[in-house]
Figure 1 (cartoon, one colour):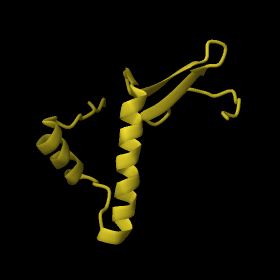
Figure 2 (figure 1 turned 30 degrees about the vertical axis):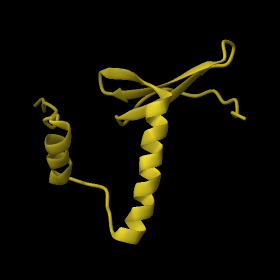
Figure 3 (figure 1 turned 135 degrees about the horizontal axis):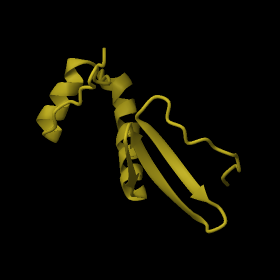
Length: 92
């Protein structure tokens, strides 16, 4: 059962994941918000990602895995996603 709570969808520290529910119409959608982009994500993809994260958490303690930080994040993005890291423009 889902607890009925008034939820704020402000994203103070992107990225944010929002689960938006319309109880009257009995529909929901999961969104990923990253600065100016708000993208809907299919439930099946979220479930698959959660399963992968669950397995990785087990491997963290058993096999020494850790979450990438710093330059490792950029390297993973380039190598596996063929993506260049996003760099914010600094205004002076």
